[in-house]
Length: 504
Ligand SMILES: *Cc1c(COP(=O)(O)O)cnc(C)c1O
Image 1 (cartoon, rainbow, N blue to C red):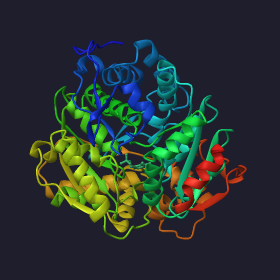
Image 2 (cartoon, protein in one colour; image 1 turned 90 degrees about the horizontal axis):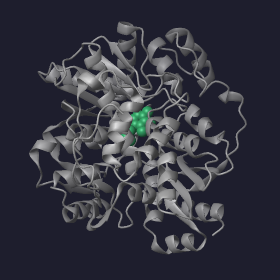
Image 3 (cartoon, rainbow, N blue to C red; image 1 turned 60 degrees about the vertical axis):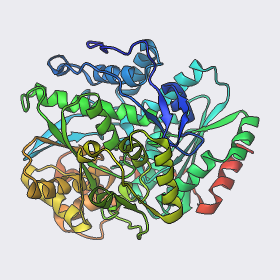
Image 4 (cartoon, rainbow, N blue to C red; image 1 turned 45 degrees about the horizontal axis):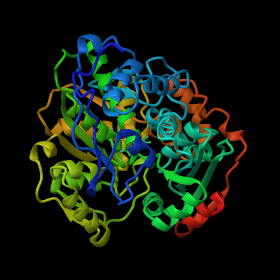
């Protein structure tokens, strides 16, 4: 490792539940538990000091930056443990040694987070989470089998299974909304191999899946029955701090690349625009800022499910609105779980206040943030892109750069254009590019060529022609791969499905 932490080596960071000040754990315990049993999320109450010296970091590899960031936040792991996890995770599963390359386009930089095995940004954290979790289990002498219970809006499920498939001591159960994912996303999941993987479609949307998963986590009776069978739940969703911390790495890495290429000087502020659903990715950027990364604005980009845009503009979070199925399905979310962590920070790390607001969200469907740290709030800007604006943006970026963005990235890119039109802010801006267009080929090709009614597999071939980027292995052969998972259940029967898989 080329850079050391400046202090804090002896003190352990505290991860506290956002809903109970007395519920505190270390990093490895937080990763094992996933969610706090009081319904809250384990969240750092202070930030480690990290020496971000970009004269050195500009020449660091992705793995070296990961070691710097992870050792600071996951401070009860040893250096050897983290080295092992990082080296196993960020290897040739990624199709480029850069791991997360930064591409310069006209007026923006796209940070490509889709070079892992499932071609979406979830791979950035989910390729390391199984190693962190099994290492933590060993550390704590855990004998239970870990059951990863996951709700997915399309990308987490596949990336989690790719990470956990056939990992000894683990079982993974994934729920996805039957009509809420792209054909490619669905096939990626239903063709998943591995004797410990289970995939279930539900009659319902992502929020239904996420709510029921959370309920199972918080069910004390279910927890006891699991324990009697030597089982325990953990989460691969971004509610697990083991997902968030690895996502801080690429913000630091992107900044280092900008310094290296001479686009900025060390210390110059950079904005990040993040296509947002569960608020995990952008929260990781916020944590990067807290450890000293020179970030100007964090621009929170939503699709037509624009509950976060409204929240940042009015400070009222109101989920009572119709759920829209869009061409950026991984952002079709009305209850953004990780916003709870920001609410906690906005209210001065106050668990009582956070808990009250989250209760109001459940019982009244809304809450208003009245008492908050204005400096934190002002870090964020927010807007959304309509379906038409998203398609137009894919076309604009293609025409100007011969580069094809996936619809999620295009939402962010469109929102950045809106931001530019209304704000005097000349800081360089990085767009978090969260998926390969090959994951959403129909939308990408239709936006560029105007063709409609393409099948997913015709679109794949056309995309290759238009973009000149070869079809990645993640989707090549998907059409003919055997489907191994065919179960569909009602949202209300999710727990029953879990009990059957686990033989409870
Ligand atoms: C999950 C996902 C998002 C949203 O990220 P959050 O961390 O949930 O805000 C955006 N784009 C893609 C492609 C995703 O898979």
